[in-house]
Image (cartoon, rainbow, N blue to C red; front, side):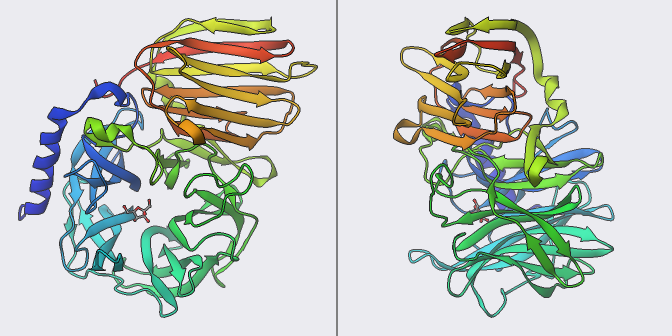
Length: 490
Ligand code: FRU
């Protein structure tokens, strides 16, 4: 096999940057690049006994630039190791970037399907995008195929946005959804089919914005969950409305029924998948256990990213299992294996009433926290949990009992004026909070994943503790437990 010079150069660049990284905000159990910039998760797949996750990567700089595909793999979805960079741009169909895409196991051949980004005029941001393929038989070294681009142009009625192919197999036929925009700037997802992953036939539009859901739908994913079909998308251009759509862009989904014969998708309303500040471009895989697992990019375009000063930028969420919950809403919970991160356990409260607060003096930065509050006959106005840093630093999670609203306030830990996110959460008699805290992130799973909130935070290394609280009344705390978590990168 010919050694790919572009990949070799990228690999050398990334190895060099790892020597100059300031570790203060490096995460302990999340996927990050070895150094420099990463964004979307790509090509989630289980192949020959290992889980593979690729990601959008710029190995030469801490800012976004010509996209490569970085690569990590794992036997258990918990402990990850780096593999060599899988794709580098620079061929005539992907001159300026190997953009997001997916992966499938095609009879033992691991196939990556990705977007080639090509500028017409970079200053004016005019470009065209193509769909391409690269294959591997060992899951480590990939070769772009001679038939590229396998889709050279979007359909006639389309704008130049044409990216992020997600491929799956149904009844012996390959299908691909692609993020797209109409000529008049309406976000939509279009569908293709193929017998061999090389020749693709355009089927038509799978779903399109009704005018309120943005100008471009990025990173589509389409899959069965329970009896339903879920269309996951990351639209650009939705206006914020009350508690909803307050990030620059957001990832969300529709629940519906799909008819493959007629390409008809009947769907409900668009719902945000996560309600924190930093969750975008999420993608899923179905594993051999039949679980639908999702991973998101744990940042947001144009937000403050102080780790750039430290020589790296961007991370992915912990893997989460998707299930269809009550009222046909999708729930997200950490995959079961995540408990393998647990080290020392501390039980702080068990079936005990508090009327102000209880402080657990714990200064570790890598923690899983579980708190359960009994809300039957609870007279308090609000209850919750605070992560106390030093001086004024804190992150506050509050459940406002009467309003049935859950909020995450990171304004005193790195988010400043736009620090609060709020979402509805029905009061069904108890509140459970499961929290994963890392050196620069917080992931909150409330009421068994009915609502999740994910945000990056940037605290001092020093922390005071964890505080469980009740405002203006008493609450029975059924459980307040935490575990120190292992650092998988050390
Ligand atoms: C989403 C996205 C994708 C694109 C990639 C480029 O965050 O804009 O649409 O493929 O990032 O890095």
